[in-house]
Length: 127
Image (cartoon, rainbow, N blue to C red):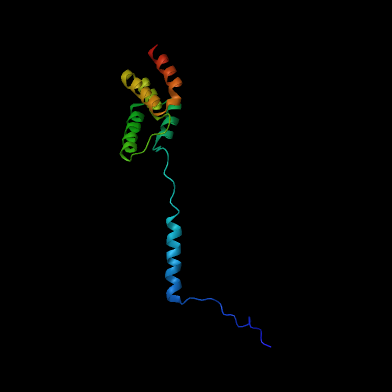
């Protein structure tokens, strides 16, 4: 007696059909793997903060952060928390009073949770 399941054939597709199907499946899966958009655009903010804490505040740092801020705005992104505060601190070390207050106010507007600290820095700065 022959086993009626012995001659079961495997389901197979012709090569001309399976290759395009495999390529389409890979393309579909690759399209789903897009990285999430970054919440903030950092540029060279962190290295500049490091240089500031090393005691090397300079006009060059302000220039770099200002250029980075223009890049960030051009791409429609947002600067990270503390960016404008750091810029304000650099302006304070250079004696540019109007820019200090402006940067601290901008930090407060963008990140309301920093308002207490920004108010503290402005009071300290005005003394």
